[in-house]
Image (cartoon, rainbow, N blue to C red; front, side, top):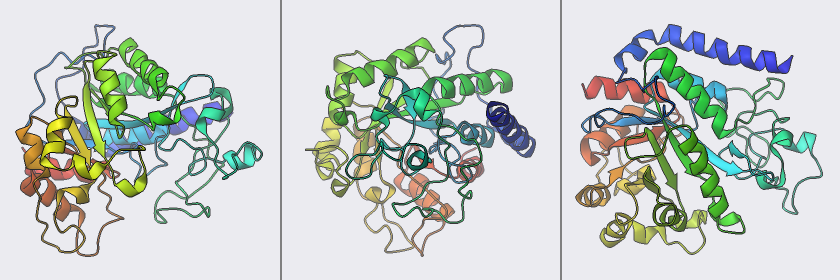
Length: 366
């Protein structure tokens, strides 16, 4: 029953969104992905218009549906995202699943189904569960450590709706299927989550992810796929040891987040730091506020030199994450877009609200 209902939800979401955004799908159509080749991830087309920024659906259409669910993927696709993000981790039995955290606490009912499987800090590690066990969980809207919704006006938390944790393979099959049926070509934007938590610093993890991508045709420079990571060691391993040909993005966080032990992200944001990144990556993914001198302090944002330095070194700039429900009081969604695309001149952005990003780009970059 639940499998049938889950399929029904996916189909219903797609029908509703395509009905509401038929014009959007048409206006955003690009050269279709090849459908007569087994390598449907290989986009044999001209380079994307470098003057039109790309919109990356952050964890799918996460502003409207629980993040990283197949339903959120379908909605982001129908809204016209250029790329849809997949945060990936590895299960106990070596399967690759899509979830933002390396823990299951914030987005699932894991504490109800497996109350005794947490660590001493109350964390339920994805790596401690098999795929079969994870598939029994239901996904809900993100909650904080007290169980309260992080974004109170988003999709209501409800464990009774059978939303599941998808695998990377499932998301690829879904996106490629929609590429074929709609004639569009939406891409993947895959993030390797904290490779350093694995005993081999994520080498096996990275190999598994690349193997899956290669199987589905994502294996060269023209493939509609990016790989991103906060961990520079992982990116260098992927490029130099695994001889990866996909485009790599160095994510840049705040040192206080402790994303990767021993890494100073402040140094990455210097002129010399950017130059070093260019030796192994194709772009950077900074936090939006890392691109301005006065973000959150003024309604007139002033870009710093980070984007300028990146472009001078041939790097793309894809900042994260624009949310209409999490903005400084003196800013609006469109005012941040104006600052990002017209002042800082970034090449794309991550957003929880795909429709608003696509609408802005279509209005301003035709």
